[in-house]
Image (tube, rainbow, N blue to C red; front, side, top):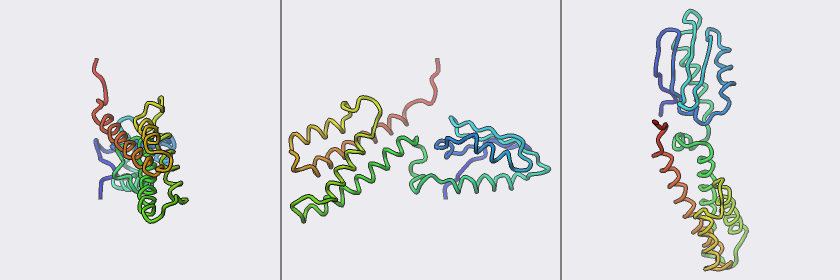
Length: 196
């Protein structure tokens, strides 16, 4: 089982923890307030950019092991989704892009398997094409017409024709996956801070 947090600094009455799942939280004040409501906790400060939580507590009211148990239970109960262990290092926007891509990919796979036995497209084929279109169009915020997956979809549609929409969607989906992999790699190699 993967660790949910790491103790970075620990002296009686003061503890700093690194909690990777803080990256995906936005309700820092609520979390701080919740932990401050524990008897013996005097202050809590979360630093979301480095995913740490600093806790000041009174050792006469609250033991270290009890505090760690509270933290463990809280962050175990707030798991983001079943793929959290795989995608914990992604920001929420990229995670959403990947989940949409996996969903539309599953629909495309099912539609592709079924299409081999049917000549006319059915609701599953139309659903897979629509899901792929939504996945591609919802990805990115800048000029969408310049995205490789959208350009691929347009070019493939013009070359294969509308009767082959499932194949157009499959090719567009593959390019979308490649683009997401490229963006993930680019974010991982980007330095966390710049030295001037």
